[in-house]
Length: 193
Image (cartoon, rainbow, N blue to C red; front, side, top):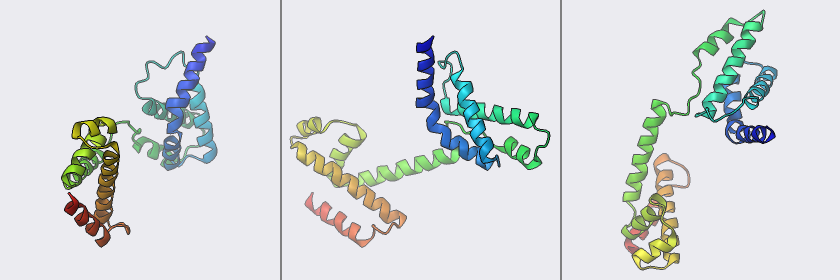
């Protein structure tokens, strides 16, 4: 029995606790007072830790949000005076899901396409090494063996590729580190290959 409780407490620490900040932010947007937020979070931890098991919980983040929302609803029901705007806000809030929103998914697809385009613009050897190391996840030793080069060259080219990609992103987004200096470095790197 004690071992099971220890496993649940460890699970709460690993899978629930990391989402406390998001739950607190959600409650603040719901216009819940700081004292009530602390009480709701504490009660949620107690309820989750008191479960007989956690194997049935597929999405810990969503489960945590749902427990807190249920506790908030209980608090509203027990309360004699409830601000109407708080109830309306609670009803209009969507429980945070582990699935990205359509906007997030579209943004991620756009970002992926941009990074793929930037990788394609790398000098040939640099691009090949970067893809093998960062995309396919091969170890430096294996890449060096496949390409007949030293591990040092693999490491340097992978770092170079990452720097060029980051510089291009900075340039595209207008970060101060970008600009003509980045274009000059990219031109020098292309000439070397």
